[in-house]
Amino acid sequence: MPKVALVTGSNKGIGFAIVRSLCKQFNGDVFLSSRDAGRGTAAVESLNSEGLKPIFQQLDINDPESVRAARDFFNEKYGGLDVLINNAGIAFKNADTTPFGTQAEVTLKTNFFATRDMCNEFLPIIKPGGRVVNVSSVMSSIALNRCSPELQARFRSNDITEEELVGLMERFVQEAQAGAHSQGGWPDTAYGVSKTGLTVLSRIHARKLGHERPADQILLNACCPGWVRTDMAGPNATKSPDEGAITPVYLALLPAGAGEPQGQFVMDKKVHPW
Image 1 (tube, rainbow, N blue to C red):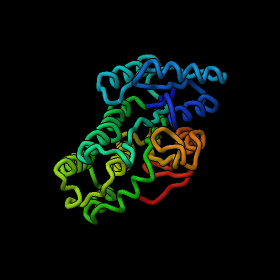
Image 2: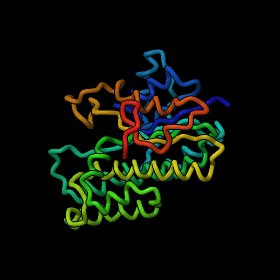
Image 3: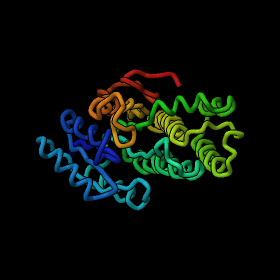
Image 4: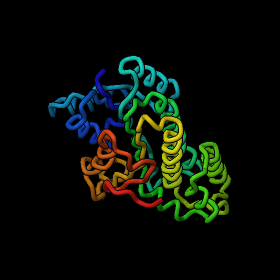
């Protein structure tokens, strides 16, 4: 069977650049995915005009039926997935006046909970030697350092469970909605907390793969693409989308037999302490 890679939220921005790079370097089929079929198809056509041949897959990570349908498609057609890059994510602008509690609920719904659902549906079909990359952010580390010492200790611990992490993310949303998140030890950044959760989830899932499928040599990491000129980050960011794709693609293409990085937070192709 041919190898296959899937990039979520890839009709524009960093995800689009990741697909472009994979089409040039990955020896297999590359799937560009988007909630909106029209935008996704247009993105594929744009890359076709560059001589690249990605394939479109409709996928809304916030829709469990869409996620399961995509999982079943890859399992049936390819016998699983070789590369999964969880890139889909959202962020409110700094000037947005949406109440913080609403921002917390909406941001964590996509960036943490829906990405967790993607992982839990797709990790069982990642093939031996597979690579999973969760696109996090340096804000995960900044937000971590702004949490209370108690929260920092749990988020850095090697024994935190997925259930405990989910409970903490739910608590953040509840306390943000009650206007009590600061007293609860949380920083004033819903995006940052969502990415803290994603980085910790990556550590948990990598540890789990090591216990449950040690012989399969699957590597799973979180990364920061950098400050990239996208709709989300704005026009003043320092990196182009193609530059932002470098680290996610590096992790997706770690050579067969590599044992590390695993369960790490990676920036500019270097492991950063968590």
